[in-house]
Length: 223
Image 1 (cartoon, one colour):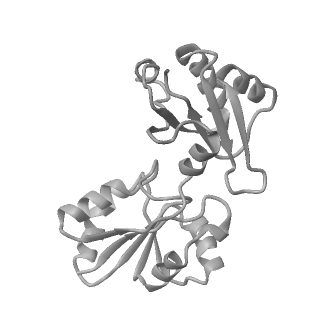
Image 2 (tube, helix red, strand yellow):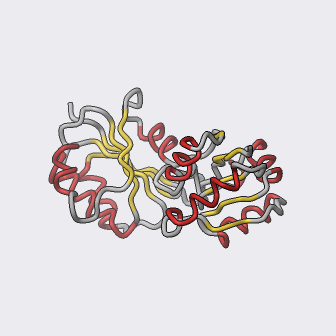
């Protein structure tokens, strides 16, 4: 029987790929990629010529069974996302669960994921934290924010640049203007930055300087 490898890829700086990840990508029979164009550039850079197949949120429900059947043979397959660790706000959970149910071995390699450096960089307590990923866009958003306003642990969110101001405005409204916030963007890339302050201060900063790039927001829990 084959094996499914969950392989983290760099979130920006290509030097953050591990030696083990490169070896696995070269040795497996197939690489499942969220976007084969994006991942194709990375694999070419790494000297990996393994065949690729598209596996993303729009087709994973249809392809899981066929992939598991292939793994139940002798093929080993690696799953990667566009950046970071698969299944963390990216496709991967459905396939991992299906493999476990089919008694196919799953091996998740350690590697890059955006929220860990953002949490450590924030200076906020990191002994206990809650990873929320992306907030609901419409339905359920107010309910979720009301619930999280009472959470004593540090909160971590992913956000897109064009929605950052709205989310920070929500934090001022639901969590309070003085709640500590840290926004990290473009982690490991040339224009990486972390802006820290109260929710009101960080909102003012990004209102005056609209952000670009991938964003992680870290919010202090309720005292």
